[in-house]
Length: 344
Image (cartoon, rainbow, N blue to C red; front, side, top):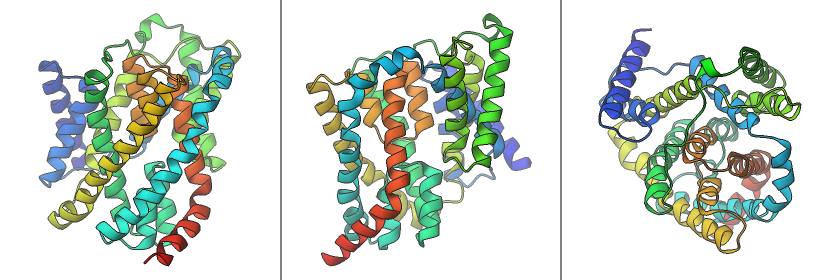
């Protein structure tokens, strides 16, 4: 309990500093920065467990509320860019596995699951079951999310002239009480029901599916209230920073450094696919960038909301990536590991 109190206090302090300095996304980057610095300084910290998971349900509801009949009408237009996602994943695997094996000396199983741009928790679980090093996977994917979430706003504003001040939602007092009640129901039932049936990413996908049904049924007409989205940003920011609690100098020098250098590789591939999508007229630059930026689904949802991007376009591509990685990981692992061994 004391460690969580330290985490919360530092996160509030970080939020206050970012707010006072008028820095972007203070409720996300403030807690993330403060917790990261404290984690690297070996402060006695701990994550918020189920509270952090519950915060992700808010983003699931936000995504579900954006799934409307108009989005389904747009799906045929998205088809061409969605078809690029499998090629994106394949290139990442073909480049990433040898990168971790030959450059950083990881074992074959750890290299594969470190290279895959799936959900952080899913890749750690799958990799551990396959015999990979769970601590290495945790740090690699934590570093990937941290760097991409940090750089993405800079790229959005500098290269795409995006404005990150889009309203994230109406105040709770302006929303109908029955819609707020339906959102809470969708968040809790979707999350726990999804876990019960073994749905991957249940904290986001479960609420998203239920809210989408309510949205399509004309029961919900807006995103979660502003206060809820800010709370989600706060706890997700904490979670990213706390991921580095207990990291050693050796891990910083080898594992975290490998994660940072791999982000450069991912950035080059993502930039190439963003250019293809925009040059072919398959999507607008901001949406294309966010759709192929290999960050966490929750973090990309936040950036899509604050940048005013088409949330349906962005999340459809991320869901496609994550589903393909999760379903195809065991099969692809055997094929790619066999290919890399044959070349050694």
